[in-house]
Length: 150
Image: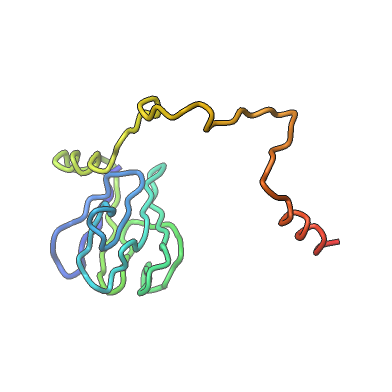
């Protein structure tokens, strides 16, 4: 699926090539970095799945809007206007693949960590026994909750 955000005022089109795309101002964490003070460091997520795009605002200060309506989450359709604070884009989606020159962006934040390389002592890990309930340091919170609702 081809998915992109086309700036309504002109400018570079943003290709949505990852299944989960983090949009914000913080360059070292975000997949799409918008260098505007009105954009939050971690502004929103765009999720690609089954030919659809979904948006999820991450508690941004100036909000995320779809067709002028401030949203916390929602689905995006072709032609929708998506706004991050005051930055407006038109959603363009359709059949086909994203431009091939964006492949390096698709894999740029992917890192695989081999747990076997950590060499942690085995005593730091407990074993799970389904016949025994999990033990906690204190069950006072559980008692307090159950006493409130009795």
